[in-house]
Image 1: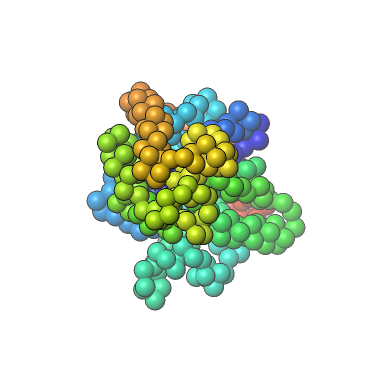
Image 2: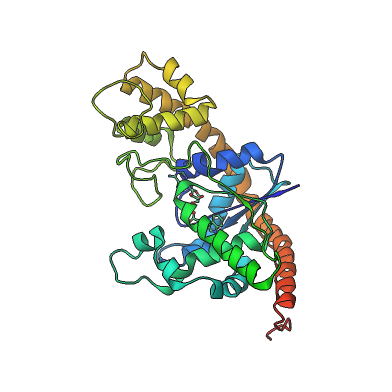
Length: 326
Ligand code: TYM
């Protein structure tokens, strides 16, 4: 089977943005691909947070991902830090990336928060991301809209690397950003993406009353007409996108069917739909949470063997020592 790869940073809760942006799409493809989902704890460390227990977050996220409906036998979720080859490959790719191109990345500029330069890990973040992808010879990578620029850079790195060595040592996968759901917006500020760092994000572990409260107070407009017009009506369009994804219907169809409702009625219906989904996920969560530590270990061991092979091959081609450092 071809291989589908993606990564998620274990820095907070898994949100409805993650669900609509990537998880939902991966679930619908899981019969046709071998799925690998990496919990990017090394990426998370680029902005260190002394209050965060990364290991605990990895367990929580992995259990939630399985609880969403990813099947154990076909989907290997693992922690990036358990496979140190990611760092080796990142280093091998580094000579093929200019500091200038890294400093132009939108996320780098956002995350350095007004400082003249950000830290080194933040700068080299996309190189590690490229390494994640090439380590497993992925065929397909699915991400949300905010990762587009990183994927473009990944592409450029691979071309330069392969050109230099005169052979296709790095496999360039197909990059996919879903048409629908790739940028779920914040409920309070629908011109910004929903992010785990904003207070009104919908967490997959939110209780039904909380979901209802957050959805009901979501910012919309004063027109009270349910229309999908992302530029003019970002709030209601965002809610329509979420609705259409969870109900598995086209946006046009949802628009047509709900046209008689006012915003408040629509929001109540949406909250119900979200809660139906979350209830199932939360019910499964406990089952997975007690099994997930063992499962992550098993998955890491399995993937590490593949990663080691890839690195051994590259070392041979690059004619650098394959002797262990110890
Ligand atoms: P992260 O942890 O920010 O987000 C994980 C994935 O979820 C998508 N996403 C969203 N999609 C739609 N609407 C939203 N509001 C929303 N919020 C997040 C993101 O686009 C992403 O696809 N750098 C990556 C992790 C990573 C990775 C990789 C991904 C590391 N290595 C290799 C792919 C391949 C990140 O920070 O994602």
